[in-house]
Length: 189
Ligand code: 5GP
Ligand code: MG
Image 1 (tube, helix red, strand yellow):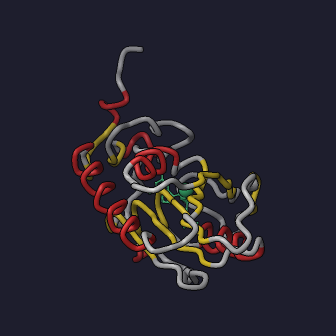
Image 2: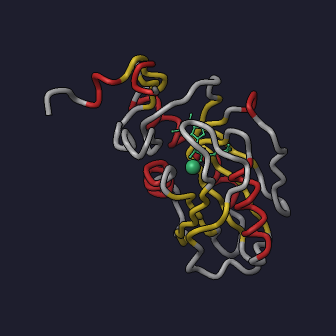
């Protein structure tokens, strides 16, 4: 290979260090909020984008949690989802009457999160909190309704641009970038 993926990045929005510091803060906040629960929450990652954040996040939580994944797919094209995601990979763990922390890479329109929350609710979760690394509130199309006493945690507010890295892809590439950035415009075409 004659170019590295790093040379495809136009701007770095959050460095590895900034990400790591923020993940620790989020995990500390969540650990404190759930410390008094008699049964530990179940952490559910939304595949594939949340895999790195999930891995870093759970390693900073100071009690034992169950970890599972769901996958929601919306057959949109390019950099936009189509608003009708379906659950294509389901949970293995029983979440009935349990507190769930849903871990996402980024919330954009809110369609994916809303669909997954509805699914977790139908499986009997007593509460669903959301912990998303990035949030693009300016692009929200549906209001995300948490379940029970669920709380919303986010790492950073993301500007209205398509980002890659730290789990997030463009055409299934760049997920393994250790930082979050924006690709050179010619690469999005
Ligand atoms: P939503 O359903 O909220 O519109 O979008 C959620 C999903 O779209 C995210 O989980 C993520 O997979 C994808 N997505 C939204 N914005 C971005 C972005 O800026 N970069 C990348 N790589 N994926 C995004
Ligand atoms: Mg995602």
